[in-house]
Each structure stands twice: as C-alpha cells, then as structure tokens.
Length: 109
Length: 119
Image (cartoon, rainbow over all chains, first blue to last red; front, side, top):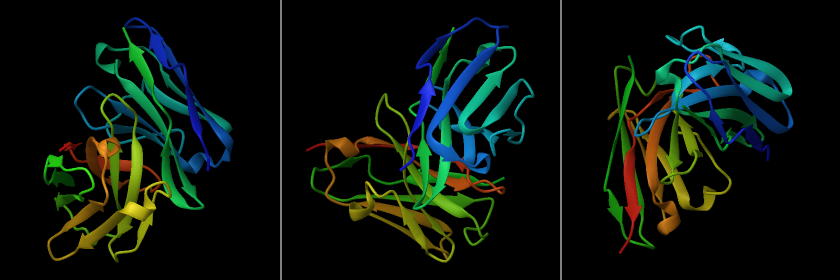
C-alpha cells in the first residue's frame, strides 16, 4: 500500500508570502491520481487541485500544483488571510481501489 | 449543484453498530459517479472508509473491510454506511463525498457528522 508523507508538518508564514507544501509517495504514482484539499476548522475538506496540476472549479490561480513520480508540490503564490488552513494530499490507488490521504500540513500565520 | 447531507445517531455504544445515511440533492445517485465515506477522528487526519457506485458495487479500505458495509438506495437517492463492532477508536466526524467528474478526487462533500462511541 502506498504511503503519502507530507512536509513540513506545520508551516508558519505571513500574508503575501509564498507557500510550498510537499507530498512524497512511497512509490511512483501517476499524476492523474493526485489531488490536494484545503480544510478549515469545523469545515469539510474542499478540493483544490486534481490530476496533480488542474485547479478545481472556482479555485484562484494563486494555487498551483506540480510534480510527478513520487514528489508532488502545492504552491500558493501569495498567501491571503483565508489561506491559513490544513492541506491534505491524496492519491487514488487501483490495487485495491482506494483513496489514500497524507497526514496533512498545517499552514499557520 | 450537488449537495450531500449526512444523518444518523451521534452516539453509539461500544460493540454496537454505527449507521449513517447520506442524502443526495441536486443530482441523481444513478449519475454514474462513485459515492464515498471518509472519517476524521478529533484532531487527526482523513481516513477513507469506502465507496460505492450506482449499481451497488463497493470498494472498501482493507483496514476496515471486515466491519464496513456501504449500500445505495436509488429510489431514495441516498447511500448508507454501517460499521459493526465499534470501539472508541471509531469516534470521528464522518463525511460523505462524491467523486469529481474527472475522477480520482472527491469534489462534493457533506458537512460531516460527529459520531461518538461511548457507553
């Protein structure tokens, strides 16, 4: 079973700065199966990025995803106050079919 | 716009069965998508429980497979989750979700419901 490891566990930045969040898979995965979510306190996760680099509907272009193989990155170009949240990467595996989540990165002011 | 709403008891006794339903509005459960359950213990990360398609074919997380059943009710436009032999470790916020049109990610989520396992 593939394991997703996110780093750092906590990232402390200020509004206006650039955030770079990492997600490393324990074995090579297709970028088609990689997604990123944002979760704010008391809310359900919301889809930001699918297929490693495609923004979901309504997601601002300051959010971008990249990567291939075992290393994937979520970049927030200029942090807005509402971006401070927890971010999860996710992989959909086929053997067996299942969603796997990373442990999350907390982005704090 | 698809909307999902979880419902069910918020308190379940140890060794009992947790049962939740996810009502679907703004779309049909027979739309050809996959419908998932995800849980999140307090202060922890996300754990996928399983999914089902409109025909009733399920996939389960191997770590929970022996205790989980997901079913679909096309007439009622909802799907359900049962977890048997629950313990305190099953205490979590339970979310229902639907996959994205592009597949392989979860685009629509319910608001979540907290289920506590306690006597």
